[in-house]
Length: 148
Image (tube, rainbow, N blue to C red):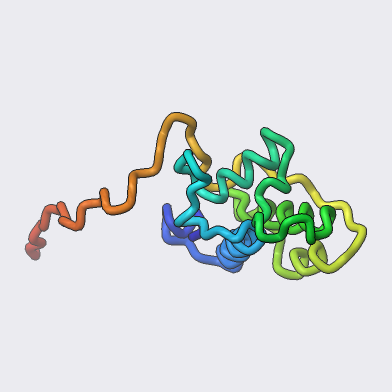
């Protein structure tokens, strides 16, 4: 879900681009964003992809291990970079769909670098709550409105 929709309920075509970026990263990694768990750490796929790209400089570690060595390195890196461009926090910095298609279908092409951090950055030391830890009990106050 695009951050601008999650926080203020604003939906636009750029929200669709965000979702496309999430799906692109899910496809190349073989993992789902909301179920991602790289062995020992609880970290979301988007945060993990960004960390591999920016901090570690090893974006190909994101790829689905089922691929083995049966992929084109440049094509895989381009898919990851386009995915990261699509999930940028600022909707104005996300490409439009025509640009996304051009970036994915044109070779060679120079892509702009994604701007750090992507939406919902991972905070070291904080772990996502384990499955089943959410309360299903609603806590709210009801205020009755009365006419003047």
